[in-house]
Amino acid sequence: MQRIHIIEDDQEISSLLSSYLEARNFQCVVSPSAEAAYRRGNVLFDLMIVDLMLPGESGLDFCRKVRTTSRIPIIILSAVKGDTERIIGLELGADDYMEKPFNPRELLARINALLRRTGPVERKSSAGKITFDGWVLDLTNEQLHAPKNLLVPLSTREYSVLSILTKASPNPVSRDELAQLLIGHDIEPGDRRIDILVSRLRKKLMDVDGKAQFIKTVRNQGYKFCSKIETINGDQDSLAPNR
Image (cartoon, rainbow, N blue to C red):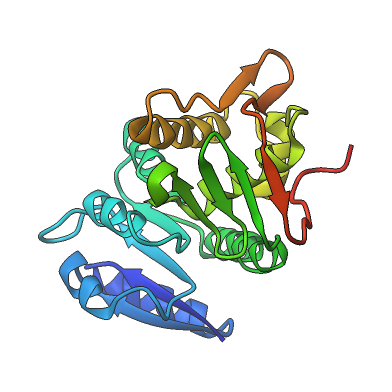
């Protein structure tokens, strides 16, 4: 049974949501604030649903802190409307964002899609290491280390993007292919989720090393990993699309 941590201060919403999900074979734990959620930790959970407007620390700040140490899937559920909060939430490491009021069936579909991608796909991905320019992508432990063995915290999707692009190198991967692998369906022309995700990953790399310009945008083709891969070892069960 997969465990979901619901961080929501509205007791009516959290009760209805947990009852709905538990009736569909999930185990739910509710925390009414970020502070209460910290006390529970995230090791034993498979996914988090986070409200933005929490008492005390905001949901955005909570997502930011969680993402520095964990790649646990996060869905933001919020009454805040508009693109600004949605983009900020995705930039801070959330994997998905839904506005209230929401359709429980749609939320369930998004939960299942996200768990499919971050569960079986990640577990079967690979073993071994990919190295480039002094960086090491540890496929066994799903970690990225910068030179001098500095651990770079990545979200689930950020890690997956880097894994996909390095394994596809030197070929580019289109936005549609990334969307299919990361989101599970095609995206509309105006949907910028993939671009935001890649931009967030680029920023993390550049924050560590200003010369780490590893991901190049290829016009009409998508994204390409452009650093020379020095070594690949281990079982390479690629996440990259078939060509």
